[in-house]
Image 1 (cartoon, rainbow, N blue to C red):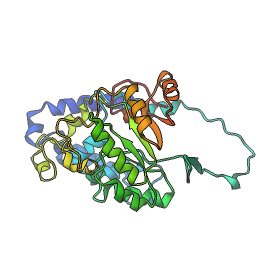
Image 2 (spheres, rainbow, N blue to C red):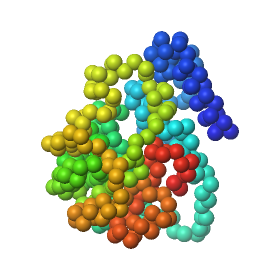
Image 3 (cartoon, one colour):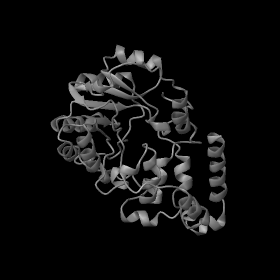
Image 4 (cartoon, rainbow, N blue to C red):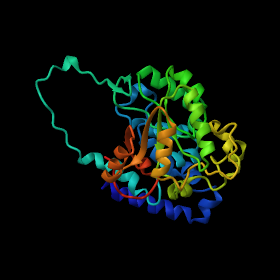
Length: 317
C-alpha cells in the first residue's frame, strides 16, 4: 500500500510539473506551499516541537522539512530516476527478522564498539553528507558537536561546507574523511596530505557515484525560478568549487571532482600512498567485497548512496 501511495504521489507531482498554472507560481514546491493541499497536510500532521518529543528518528523528518528551504529540501529528500532504490532501501528493513535470546542480564548491556583503535558509544554513525550548511547555518560544526556529545563516529564529506580542521576541533577528535577522488592525481594527493595533516587516519573512498546521476525528483520538485539562489550560489546550485573549502589552494581547472576512470589500479595507487586505514564506500556485491580483500582494503561501507547514485532497485540491507 505504501508503495502504491508513493507511486501515486510521483504521478501527481508529474501532473503538477506540467501545469502552466503551477509554473506561474514558481514550480511544484512553491505551489504546494501556497495551496490548500499543503495547508491541510500540515494541519493534519503532528510535527514535533523539539527533540524530546520524538518517538523515533523519522519524527524529525517533517520538522526538518518545514525549516529547510524548498530547493535544499528537494535535493536532500530525492533519489535518482523513479526513486525506486531509495524506496527499496527502507522497504528492505521490513524483511529482516530478529531472533531474541531471553534471560540475559539486561543491566549489563554495552553498545560500545571499537573501530580502528577508537571506541564509540554505539555502532550507529553519521554518514558523510555534503553541503550541510544548506540545511542548518552551523552545518558540519553542529553535527560535530552532536557527535561529540553522544560519542558517535562522524564521517566528513569531501563536499563539506566546513573545513576538516574546524570540524575536527569541534569534534575533539579526527573525523573519518570521505574521499571523492578528483580526476587529477595531483589534486587527490593534495587533499590527502591536508587530511593527514589534520590528524585523520581513516579515509573512505566513494566509488558508487563516479558518472553522475539523474536526480529526477529533485529537478521536478525544486523551485523553477532559481534566481534567488544566486545570492548564495554561482551557476547551478552546489557546483561552485569555491563553496567547497577542501579544494582551497588546489587548481581544479579542467579537473573533475569525481574521477570516472577510477579502477582497481587507482585503488592500488591510493593504497600505496595513504598510510592510514582505507575503506571503500559504495560496494554492494560479494564479488567486489572479495576484490576489496585481495587489494588490501581495511573495510567496506555497503552502500548505494542512499538510493542517490544508480537505480539498481536493490536494498543494501
